[in-house]
Image 1 (tube, helix red, strand yellow):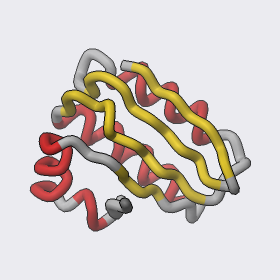
Image 2: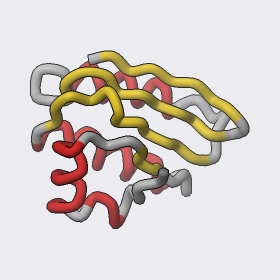
Image 3: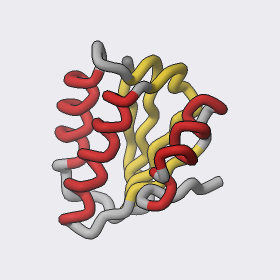
Image 4: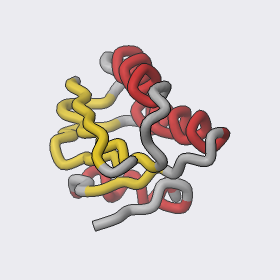
Length: 102
């Protein structure tokens, strides 16, 4: 798993690359927490275009980051989900808390 990020116009862009599962969850959680702790953005867009797999552990990682950012009133949006991720987000209702944007 690779996590890439950049800030542009007060928006934090995060690109998740690889598999988000029980093997990569700890690394991804810690990396996202470090990135999210920097106070230089007002919203987050998570790009899933390079995420090849996600299981329930990965869903937990994303929900946990959502809860942390909700406390700070910083919304999280999802973009470019694979068909696999799209099914998971629709099935679990994750788009209700982290809307999909184009």
